[in-house]
Amino acid sequence: QVQLVESGGGLVQAGGSLRLSCAASGCIFRINTIGWYRQAAGKQRELVAAITSRHSTNYADSVKGRFTISRDNAKNTVYLQMNNLKPEDAAVYYCNLEQTNFIGSRLRYWGKGTQVTVSS
Image (cartoon, rainbow, N blue to C red; front, side):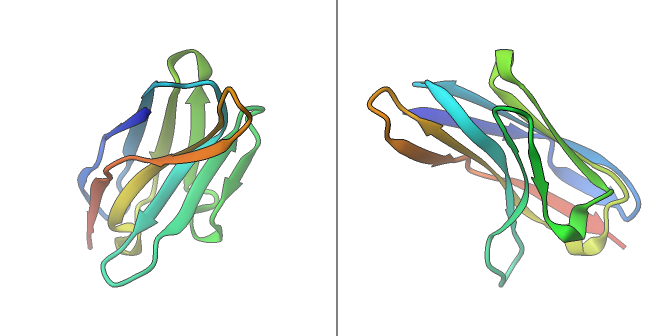
């Protein structure tokens, strides 16, 4: 199994910044993509940002230019730097990891989520 532990959420005023971290541990073989999704109350979970093993990144249009995703392969950790936060960024942020295991199966794992609240 793989465990994902998120940290860094909290309450911030609009225009402020937060940095989320997600540390992966357990049966890690080859991480393909690791990233962040978010789910606001009453809405579907959506991709925020993801980064591949080759450090290619993908961002939701709504966060481009404000959020930056990065990863430390040695620590199996992914970060999400969130700047200029807006009230509409408020949500539970979930870490997601996709890896290929030793028999070639692609598996996905989710963290428990961390709350981000943005006050206007």
